[in-house]
Length: 93
Image (cartoon, rainbow, N blue to C red; front, side):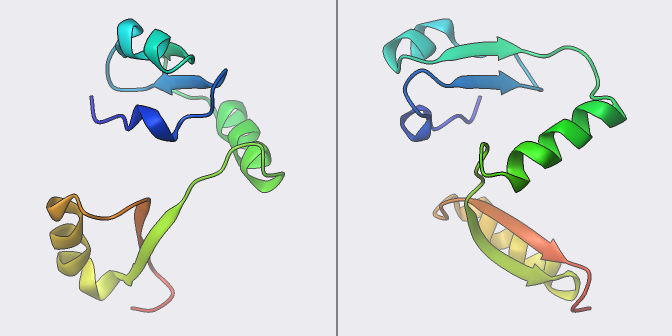
């Protein structure tokens, strides 16, 4: 699993949607790690949106590419040298 454990806040909660996270790494970094086997509902996504909007959950953005440069975004992602999310913008096609 591609978790950068050191960026998690001590006492925080990691919820993985893809596989069971390492409990050993969770203990080492003083976080709770859970695996969500259910698909998110509309209400779940709405709750996440609210948590992001109020700043409870923060996502770091590395870069934003126009959709027409999706190939460049993929190249950047594959280098694994960025810090944060790489986004595609549909407003700048």
